[in-house]
Length: 140
Image (tube, rainbow, N blue to C red; front, side):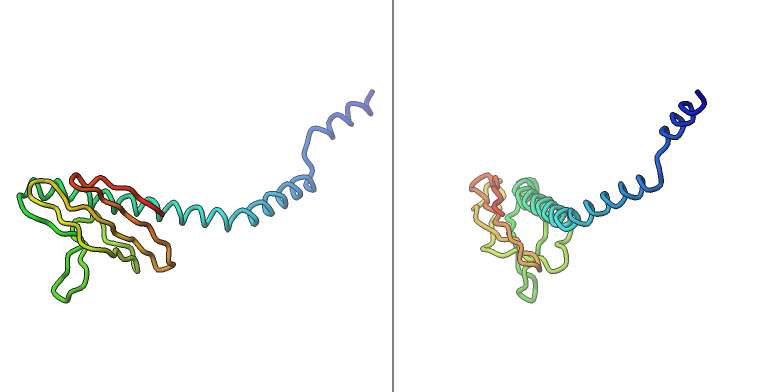
């Protein structure tokens, strides 16, 4: 009787070898999935920032209406470089927005147009703004 109760007591715990095997399997899974997870997070960040940029540009329509003035996006600064006034946060380092300026009239209408957002690692998204209300579509 004593033998069977000792045997049951031994089976309750987990051995160090079993823990090490499980940790090795988890480590291998993490090593294999980490690069794709990193790419996924980069794509998610790019998508989120692109959405924010598009919303900020579309909001310029309301700003032009409220302030009763005509706005351009992008504008040219004193040196002829593009200036991105109206964005809620500055563009990340190395990012650029290219395309013909979109004009936002004091009436609240806009000319519409296409802008391209580009990152230093050559990831791009096209922002299409439809006149006259400047609703936008994003193509990555």
